[in-house]
Structure formats: structure tokens, C-alpha cells
Image 1 (cartoon, one colour):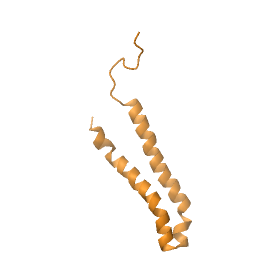
Image 2 (cartoon, helix red, strand yellow):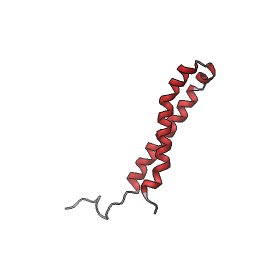
Image 3 (cartoon, rainbow, N blue to C red):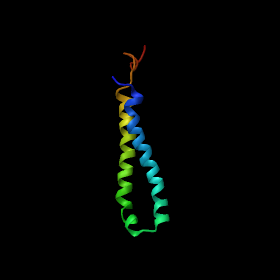
Image 4 (cartoon, rainbow, N blue to C red):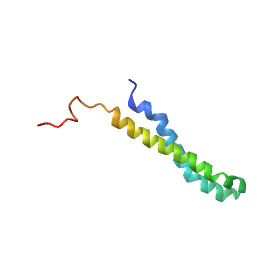
Length: 78
């Protein structure tokens, strides 16, 4: 199995780039003052939100299902 840090490196990078693009987009609108760029704001933010949400969701699933836990660690000790 590959190193978990390397396995998630590109996914994490894509989520960070999307987050910064979401913050930078209003600055682009303010500087350019273009109606065409403003008309794609809805689809842009839907796509950016989907990328970030999928990263968070799959990271949670991966952490919950594929975490290395010793056998019997989840069972109650009596």
C-alpha cells in the first residue's frame, strides 16, 4: 500500500487550489469589472464547492474505513 501522505497529496492540493480560487474570484470581478466573468459565478462556485466537499467527504470515509486499527480495538472490553 502506498504511503498515505503521498496518496492524498494531489487531492489535498486540488482542494487548496479550489479554496484559494474561490477567494480570488471576487477580486478578479472587482479588478476586471467584466459582465462575462460575473455571469459564470454560479457554476464556478458550484464546481469549487463540489471539489472541496468531495475532498472532505472522501477523506472522512478513508479515515473511518481504512484506518489501521488493531483487531478488537472497537469491541468493548469487559
